[in-house]
Image (cartoon, rainbow, N blue to C red):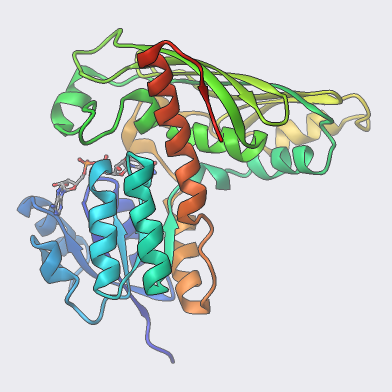
Amino acid sequence: MSKKIGYAVVGLGVGKAHAKAAAGSKDAELVAVCDLIKEKLDKAAEEYPGVLTYIDFDEMIKNPDIDIVSICLPSAMHADFAVKAMEAGKHVLVEKPIDITVEAAMKIEEARVRTGLKVGVIHQNRNNANMKPIRDAIQNGKIGKLIYGDFEVKWYRTQEYYDNGGWRGTWEMDGGGSLMNQAVHTVDIMQWLMGDVESLTSHMGVYGHNIETEDLTASLIKFKSGAVATFVSTTCAYPGLNTGIKIYGSKGSVEADSDELQLWSFKDAPEGEEKEMLKKYSGNGSAAALDPTLCTGHTSMVENMISAVKDNVDPQILPLEAIKSVRIVNAVYESAKTGKTVFFD
Ligand SMILES: NC(=O)c1ccc[n+]([C@@H]2O[C@H](COP(=O)([O-])OP(=O)(O)OC[C@H]3O[C@@H](n4cnc5c(N)ncnc54)[C@H](O)[C@@H]3O)[C@@H](O)[C@H]2O)c1
């Protein structure tokens, strides 16, 4: 039997989901975890007997048994740590957002090209079951010409959530608030479904928390296709409501709340299609809208990364793809700060 792929995780917040997925993979072995907090390391050692624990990331990446490192650190640390890991010969899987600026994220892409190692980025919501039929309906013309998209991430986070994280809700480490942290998933979905953005005009503000970044953004977006969208993100919508993904074309309309398909209505659809589709893609809705620990879907992306290394193919989401949402988020902030429309190349 060939040797299992050695997996390591740095950052044991959401990183615990990466560790669990790696430990449960038939092709990988969880070799090591790294965090600054000893209690988190002790807990991991208890859960995964034999796993090595490190406080020092530089020490961990010297371990020759590690092939892949999941980077699950505060967002502004992603590029530095991903590049260091690649320079030590490790493939990397990076949490969303890839980093908080396009410039930082490009350092990951440059290191990927330079080293020839694999880099995947987590945007697990693309793997929600309902996303495939929605994307197919757009790509194969079932929905017709795209007219309008309506995206809303109406989530709730307490003040304690921001206070406990330390880095959350700061420009320096989180790179923003509700949009860069929570809604970046839906920004990624929006551009993946609707295509390249041409321009956007935005407002942002702090409405319900004592934080330096925003907890609400509202944008009007125009796509290169000519379609338009509205996009609202907030962490003020008590008690945590929905993740609306609604797309209207010349031949029909689809609406979803996260992984739950809510409307599937097409002019030429056969009788009963909508009922069947809503039943098939009933989903779970927006659990993470109210509780950050209920983010799911990491297993498929960790498995995808392990397979990419094993089979020497590209992981599902490459850096240049993940950079698109970071570019859009920063353009929203620029527009909101300057009061001007931002145009894309
Ligand atoms: N894909 C998702 O659904 C999802 C969900 C939550 C978080 N995230 C992303 O994951 C990243 C981490 O978020 P989180 O909520 O887990 O944060 P967190 O604060 O809960 O965890 C980060 C961990 O990193 C550790 N850490 C910080 N500096 C370190 C260092 N130098 N060396 C080793 N460990 C260090 C901290 O001690 C902490 O345990 C963020 O980029 C966030 O956007 C993604």
